[in-house]
Image (cartoon, rainbow, N blue to C red):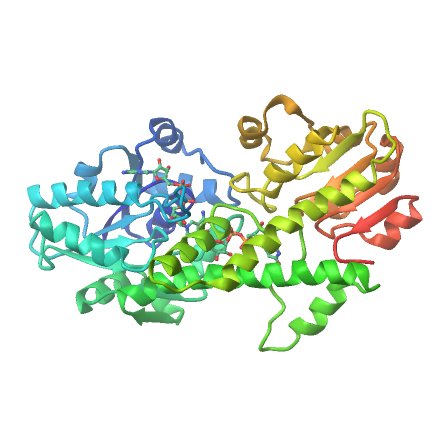
Length: 439
Ligand code: NAD
Ligand code: UGA
């Protein structure tokens, strides 16, 4: 099948690359020329394990191409995905300007190049309920009826850092459409999922849009719940990891997303919670739980700051070594990373920051600026430090050489906001150790 993907970001690029791997002929389009040039050379603009191999393999096969020319790509495509960003506006609502620009571009192309069978326009971006219907109305007012273009909602559930695996092997595929043509075309596009009996959830457009926000919101609820519980455990001589394990073995609760941390970040949970709250407001329903999730998440970052500051009391010109800047491991994405809130607060309290991240420093620099010293290793970051703060759970931090680390530091103190260090090992090595959610 001939497919066009609009947007070569995390979702568009991964979708395009995986569809090419399924055997389709895929053009991925972006308005960012430097991104497209990089991609044409087989280089990924994002850090995502496994993606470059798939890009180069599918470029070489001739099934995958990158360009800025939407018209040439989309006029012959039978399926067009829209995977542009839908960031937060000032009010918290999803800002749909990139999406509607892409829709208007497609309306103009469809008007110029009529085809015998309807083009399937798939909204993959995360959009509030009612958006796909608004897209249909927009197409209709441009003279493009259902006989020419069918709108389908197919939200994406991939996780950064695991995006290729999630895209090749999703737990479910949600398809919202009012039309059998839409369902059938998407099903044949996703033939490997059908062969592997991955469940398809065929629902109305509105339900598909809601499923995406509700899923992200529910996962955020779990994280804020365990983070709040972590604070209580610290006061009651309990380890929240033991509590989470005991809870998670109950099949109704499940073990995942019960890991305490410095608060959730990333390009989606924070913005999607705000967007869903805004949908609630618009419809006269106050989504109280989401407000609480957001405020627990903010408090969590302040809690981490308090833990560090309390350990710097009395130290002149204190130095904090920060391990990890990205919002989670295996990504270089800094969007809404807890480090962006935590580090400026530490600096405002007089700390000098020496940070190390395996891949995110280049993306962090424009956001945090020169107020942070960027280091090339964990040991370099620890040199002369009074507190070592762990913010991202990169694999290499789990088995860090504690004796070597101690030798680097001015005072051996660890604030572990990710619970990556074994407390007993740290204590044996002579560290004063604090792990989030542990007495
Ligand atoms: P992104 O910012 O990484 O990428 C968006 C890309 O679209 C950019 O490269 C931008 O230049 C391009 N673009 C914007 N307008 C365009 C146009 N008219 N034509 C061509 N290209 C255009 O965004 P993302 O993280 O991939 O997210 C995209 C959507 O998917 C969002 O709605 C997001 O909420 C959702 N989503 C993201 C993830 C994730 O892990 N990042 C997961 C699931 C869903
Ligand atoms: C999340 C969802 O997991 C995806 O299903 C969804 O497609 C995506 O958002 C999206 O809509 O963009 P992602 O943001 O890549 O994916 O990362 P997650 O693994 O969900 O982590 C999000 C944040 O929660 C991170 O800051 C992470 O450290 C934190 N987290 C996660 C915890 O603090 N504890 C946990 O137990 C799990």
